Length: 293
Length: 311
Image (spheres, chains in turn brown, green):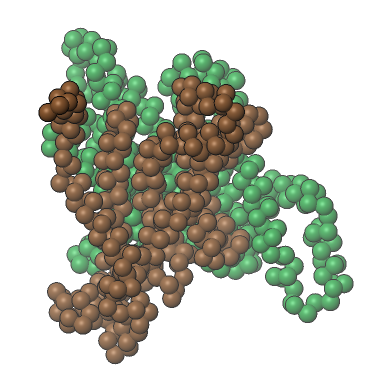
C-alpha cells in the first residue's frame, strides 16, 4: 500500500450507501423485464398483435383451463393476449419515452429562457406555467383532441406537453441558484455565449434534479396515455396500447376477465416500480431532497 | 387580511380564466368553419357569404372575439350538434350527478387521507406507519380505471353486493366514489403525515402536553391548524386531479355526469358542449385556487402581511 490515505477516505463513503432494499431490487428487476419485453416485442411475441383467428375466440389462459397455444388466452377476435400485451407494452413505453423527451426539452429550454431574459418573455412563460398548473391537463388534452381531431402526432405532442411546466419551474430556479454560485458569472466574463453557458456548464450541474423529475414524470405519462387510450381517445385500433387493451377487455368483464386484467396489472406494476426506483434514485442523487415529502 | 393580497390572488385567477377563454376561441377558429359543417357542400358561394355576414364571420377577428365574449357573459355557449339544444342546458343537467360523485369522493379523500396520515404520524415507525406509506405509494401508482374494473369484478360480478354501473340510490354511489377518492387519499395521507411530524416536535406542542391537555385536543386545536397549510395546498392541487379523475371514473361506471358527457362529446366532436365544459372547469379551478390562496392568508397571517402571493 503506497497510498493508505486514499483507502481510508474511501471506506466510510462506501459504507454510507447501504444495499438497496428488496422492494427496490424487485422494482428494478421489473423495469428490466418490461424494457426487454418492449424492446424485443418483435422476437418475444409468438403471434402478431393483430393476427386474428376466429376459430380460437375467447380461449381462457393456461391456468384457467386453456391450451398452451395461447398461454394467456385469446380475445373476442381470437388474437393472442400475450402477444397483444407485449406489443401494447412497447407502444405505451415508446409514447411515454417520447413524451418525456419532448417535455424535458421544451420545459428545460423554457426554464433557461425564463431565467435568462428579463421582462415580458419571463412573465409570459410564468403565466403559461401558472395556466398549465391550474388546469387539469387531461381536460386540456381532451379539448385539443376535440378541436383538432385525433392524430397520432398530435396525441404524442400533447403527451409530451404534460409536465413541461415542472421542468421549466425547476430549471428556472436551479439556474438562478447556479448564478448565485458564481461559476456561471465567471464563465460569462470569459465571453462565452449564454446558450453555451447553460448547455455546457449549468445543465450538467442541474441534471441530477432533472433526471429525478423524469422518473417522477414518466409514470404520470404512462397513466395519461393509458387513461386516454382506455377512453378510446388515445391510441387508435388496430394499433394497441396497455390502456386500449384494458378498454377492450371492459366489455368482456363478465365472461372473459383475462382480456383486460393483465394489461391493468402491467400498468400498475410498471408505474409502481418506476415510482419506487425514482424515489430511491432521488435519495442517492440528491441527499438534500430526502427530507421533502 | 390585506386588500392587496386578495387583489393579486383575484388578478391571477382572472388572467387564467382569460387565457382559457382565448385559448378556446382561437382553437375553435381553425377547427372548422362552422358554415362548412352546417351547410351542404354544394351551397352557392353567395348563400355562404350571406350566412357569413349573418353570423358575423366576415368581421375582423377582434370584433368576433368581443362578440364571443359578450355571448359568454350572456350565457350563450352555442348549440350542441347532437341534441340541438343550447350547450349550456345540456351540460347543466349533468352537473348535479357530477357534484354528488365529486363531493363524496372529495370528502372521502380528505377524511381518509388526513385520518391515515395523522395515525401514521402519531405511530411513527410502527407497522401502521409502514402500512400507510405503502398503501399511499400503491394508491398513487394505481390507474383509477383499473382499480374501478377490479372493484367491478369483485363487488359487482363475483360477490354481487354492489351495482356496477348507472345511477340510483346510495349503493350506486359506493364504487365510483371509492374509486375516485382513494387514489388521492394516499397522497393526502403522505402530506398530512410529514406536515404533522414537523409540527409535533415544536416546543409549543410540548408546552401543551405539559399543561395536561388531552391528546385529541392537542392534535385538533394545536397541531392541525399549523400543519394545515401544505395539506390545504395539496387538496387544492388535487382538485384538478379530481376533475380529471371524474372524467375517467364516470366513464368506467357509466355515471351520467359531466365527465362522461365530455368523453362522448369529444369523440363526436360536439364542440359547443366541449367548450362549455372546458370553460366551466377553468372557472371552477380559478375559484378553487382563489379559495386556497385566501385560506393561506387566513391560516398564516404572515403570508398576507408580507403581501406576497405564494408560488
